[in-house]
Length: 290
Image 1 (cartoon, rainbow, N blue to C red):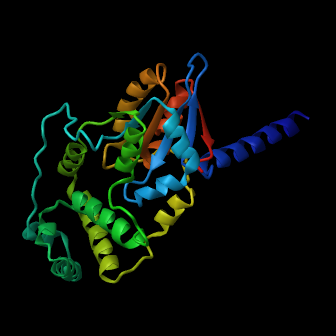
Image 2: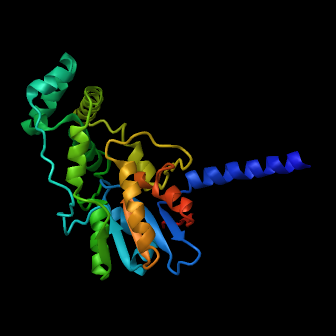
Image 3: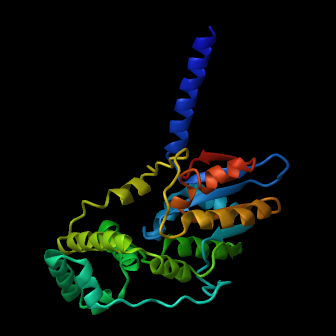
């Protein structure tokens, strides 16, 4: 009988874990005994058509109900930095040639020629990977009937401001974060990013949309949060930023109802906001985004 009960509990745990990892939503309710207000976590996708947010009626309604919106960095005040400005370490054609083989060089040259933007050679591999990913997502994967090319985050910020809600930043100047990450890249990482750059250039030169599934998964709310998995080191200081944000959010949740709109990767994995809040005694449960 004990073995049967234990097996049943394990089975229930497995179902619960799967349901939490793939809850079919982008929206999570945050509550805690002794805290009067409910707050919300919402996972954005920076490059997806921002008007997609308006199709998520439940999420829009929750945003309108709260006191404060938190975004990674406000679009209104971009000078939110407590650290010294980081200078871009410009790259050269010679540096890129040293990373690429003959075929890769030809693809890079063809992309630069077609785009008429030799400035691509000036970006370090990590930053160019990010830039090309944004271009591929906005202009190839999610360009059908698109109404705006601003980020979803800034669109949500404008929506909150139109409803007279307070907006606050969680981060310092994000450009500094990216530049620091780029400066810290090893030669092996640079080589890996260079390969990714050439792959993205190849897809865009050939109008190849085979890498766009991740956009459809997001818009269908098909996110695997992998809440029990430990994320490997992230190039954009994801874990470190989550830890820093938690100190702010834990305090403000006690006084205000908040809507926290950040990249959905910040909600994933053991180091994500969902699990970190649970470790602090909060109930964090998925709710309908639509």
